[in-house]
Image (cartoon, rainbow, N blue to C red; front, side, top):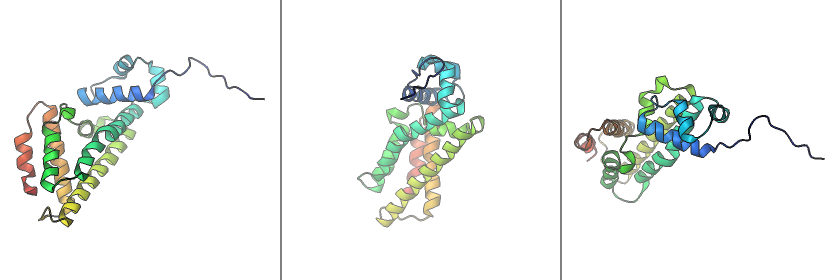
Length: 194
């Protein structure tokens, strides 16, 4: 005999991926501290209790949005560092993504969340730290490989170069989000890798 479990309330109709995508886009385009839960519920067409039931709280949703951004956007940027081409070509790709790539017209969600992390929840802060480490690891690996292949002479420590590269790309993304053109500044900043 099979027992069927009865649930109280309405049946679950919330599409988690849809809600996360809407939250990611809203946080990315408007800023992580500028979007209310009520606004997100309205945009996603879900009730607030459903949202809280699925994500626990606003922190859970913000963390899920950042995780989605890392997987769907940042991972593709990091892949550009591993693709074919010379060291100079790969640096050029980074400059293009940060200054002209249409996907980043509004800057970078990670950079925006990192800038406002003290006003975000514990789970989101933890995800920001994980993402920071992932990016630094990718830049370190990129510079290590360039040094091994003799594409880059590396007159300073690789870890310092990775931190510098990460900071300059982040600065360019923040400038772009403010409507400024970071091209000249970023090209000058990254000229130390030539």
